[in-house]
Length: 292
Image (cartoon, rainbow, N blue to C red; front, side, top):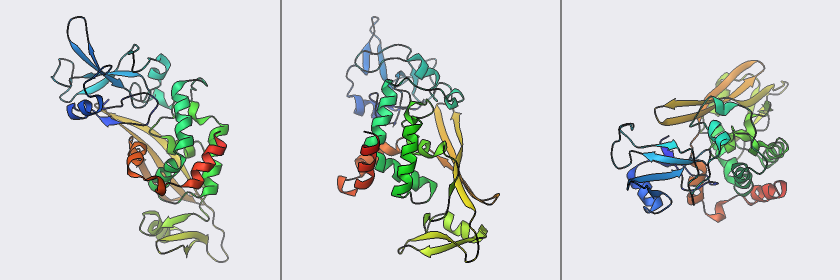
C-alpha cells in the first residue's frame, strides 16, 4: 500500500513518504521501534482495516522494496498502536482486492465496525455531501433518511466491504434502483445536458439560479431510475483504486453512466476544510436520532 494512518478507528489516508511520516509521527514510539539488533522499524496503521503495518524503504532502499517506500501488513500486535486481526487482514482490500467484495460480516463489537457506526452518526452530513457531489445530484433530507434507516436495518457497518473510504457509497450500493423524478441537478454538471440530449420524457423546472428539478413532460410518464453498481478494486503496484458506477436508466435504455473513483481521504479533508457553521444541522440531528 502507498498510504498509512496514525491510529485505528479514524478516517485518514496519508501518502507514504519521509516528509509525511515524520510530520505525523514526530519520530516517536510506537511508530519507531528499535529491535534487539539495533535496527529501526517504522510502524503505522492500515487506512482500511485498522491492522498495524510496517513501512518498508522509508529511509533507504531495501532489497525487497520498490523505488518508493510502501506499507505492508504486520502480522502481530504493535503495543500502543494497533492490534492485529487475521479476519480483518484477510478481508482488507490492500491484502486481497477480490476477497474484499465478499459479504462477510464483522462481529458486533468489532472495533472497526463500531468506528464506522460512530463516523456515520457524527459525520452524516459530510457523508451525504460526498455522495451527492460525486454521483452528480442533490440528496434530499428525506432520501438521506431513507438510506440511513436501511443502512441501520441491514447493519451496513458490519460488512467487511464497508470501509472508512467508501461509507458514502455503501449507503446506496446495496439499494435497488430509485426514481429520478424530483431529483435536483446542477446546471453546470454532467447529467443535466446529457438528459436534455438523450432523455425522452424528461422535463426540467428551474430551482434557483444554478439548479433544475426533474419533472416529466406533459402527458408523458417518466420511467427513469438510477442506481450504483460495479464496485471494483484495481491494484497498480502499491496503489489501490476503488471505483463504482452511477447509472441512470429510462425505460430499459441507459441514458447516463459514469465511473466514480473513491477519494480515500475525502472525509478526513472535509474535517479540516469545513467550519461548524457550514455543517448541515438537520442531517446531523437526523443521524444522531436514528443511530442513537
